[in-house]
Image 1: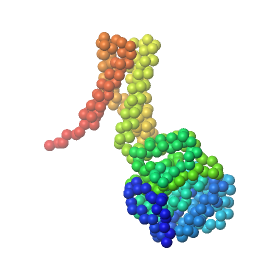
Image 2: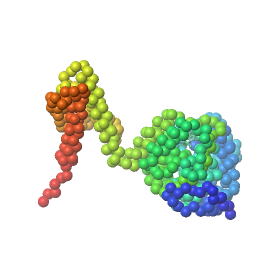
Image 3: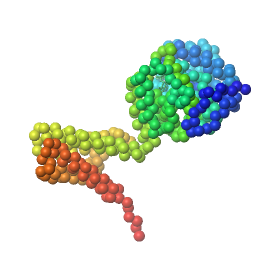
Image 4: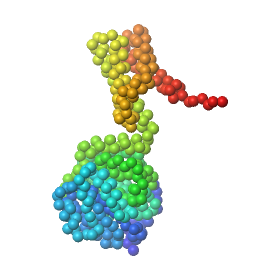
Length: 390
Ligand code: GDD
Ligand code: MN
């Protein structure tokens, strides 16, 4: 029986017993390894060679599915030339991208355990058995991690890329506790994948997408030594990193729907305060009377608040009838706006506000009072609790 040396201990994010007996891996029906590729012709034979050795050493039933975005660099021929009947390549011509490629690969996989890994030899195929053992021990998702004891990354990454990766990981913290959710090396059951609803993968972070959308709770990490690629180039561009922010927003919305609506509403509200003050100050700079400045600030900020709320906070309604929505929004904000205006005007007549930035100060007090009115009005009138009839 083959046994692994105890050194690469699986780190328990969810705590599970680690059996070191690799013979158990054999009891699985089979493993589908999905490898997204774009211009990896040089790496394909090298990766296949290492997987072939693994397959032989552990007597594994497996298939390798390269999912290529029409690289046209001889990748197809390279897979064919390998002569392995357990390796095939799928060429995609639409909806380019790493995550959609992985999803397509998973969909055509024929075995009950799915593994995803890069083609550039950054991820050691020799760690696949550890990933599978984690699943056998009851984990729902196993990830190869650079940031658990025993894991590492090549140092020539440079400070900026390291920092970038750490920040990206930190931003994902509320979604998952694992140390390296950015990793593209992981395993899960096909049955769990098939149950995933509303997968919407943008960009690179396919593992994070799956953990959140499949609601995985038991996620384990196996330390890996992440190697920088030797052949070819990384495709992780700045544009991909911007997509990550968009991806995070969607995942937060998915996981924290209600809190996210409130948070976005508050952020939009805060932006409205800034817009209000800027407009008001501009009008004041032209020497216009206070009433006009205050009304202008309020008017413009109501419009930007409306547009931003429509686009972001309540984006599910962004294709609804804009005029009717605007009328409703005006109705809902009218009392608050009026209170804000009146309070500011009143305060302005007081000597206390006859100072530098007195107009802005009065406006802020008005906005605060207006917000309280808005809140109370909504709480006790618009959305009041209905009385129980006797
Ligand atoms: N089909 C397809 N389409 N494959 C792609 C695409 C694409 O648009 N872009 C990249 N790939 C493939 C690459 O050929 C490689 O096999 C794998 O996806 C990872 O791409 P790299 O370009 O090597 O990414 P990286 O090394 O910068 O990113 C690595 O680290 C990230 C975390 O820092 C990967 O492990 C990522 O998965 C990981 O998120
Ligand atoms: Mn890479």
